[in-house]
Figure 1 (cartoon, each protein chain N blue to C red):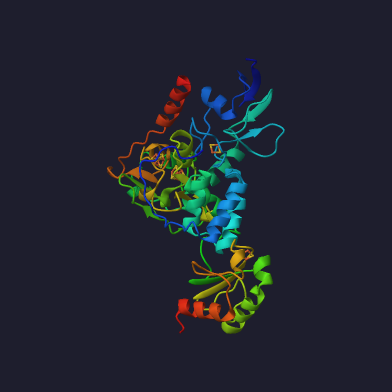
Figure 2: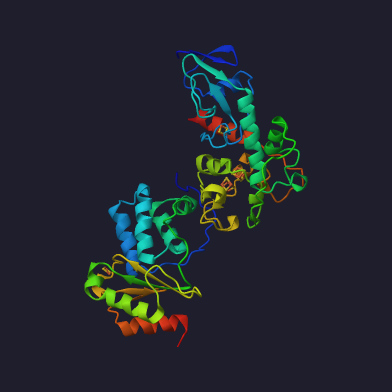
Length: 173
Length: 235
Ligand code: SF4
Ligand code: SF4
Ligand code: FES
Ligand code: FES
């Protein structure tokens, strides 16, 4: 059953940008599934792939679109071990390894990250400052190779750009 | 309606086959202990207190979710049943932090009453002493997870009767907790209508109104049952 009464409205979740390719990707997935609440798990998988984890704003977006109570969505997320509510690392670098990005050099970017920070996909630094993850297509193929550092989507990324952007975030420069 | 015959505790009853064992027992004055059951809400068979023995079936069955069947032979008060009920009750106390002396429900608590019923004098299991939150963010009500037994009556009344679906359950195993919205403070809920039904449905002192003195809380779970009955009549 969906919520039928709304007396209080608190905007406790930050707005997502409609132009964020990751948001568009989730929106497209929901549309493909006809916004069926049954497709929640599939949609959560899409979201986790694109974001590397499930931020609160993303859950809020999905709950609204599917007309599901927030607590129902949160219940599902916490029931399955493959969903994560927290990013691995204070700062995150998500490298898209979908077909378009792979062809345009995603592996070279990962190699560069590994040589620079000794991090393989799925790992975090010992001080938990930086985590590196890979995603299948995040919906920014036109910008391949695409990388998301924290919440910034970078397109046509070079090895130099990726290292500089990460350093800027973690403040080692 | 065709009636069927069942035998409960060696007595024969002619009953409507749509009924559960629990309904038949209650209608006929046979005592069955329950906790997650609240008449008017959907039964989920979660607490396992209402267990009965049914001839020909080895497992104990929950009376609240098992329908009667022709010539069923049911026992409600065997030693085996009593043993399990006592274990279940002890675990309720051991799983969270129940300090009756300082509880708003002291003397009027369904869990306390259950303890008396199963003649609980001590708990044979180690207390888990989990770290539990007390959410005081709602302007009128408090949610104290220390006293929650995860019966989910609050979840069901809020969803099925009020239609708000503020509550749900997060995690699994011993980490399970009742949550409001995105595990966010109750006072920030975008779904709660502040109707107070969950407070009355809750069998313990887990949900209580702020305007109350210790031991003075009178809950009215029957209100939920009556509300559901009245709505059915209207339909
Ligand atoms: S007060 Fe009413 S709407 Fe709010 S959580 Fe309780 S039952 Fe749901
Ligand atoms: S808060 Fe009360 S009604 Fe809700 S699950 Fe806990 S004990 Fe049951
Ligand atoms: S393959 Fe990388 S954005 Fe589509
Ligand atoms: S009352 Fe039947 S299982 Fe809880």
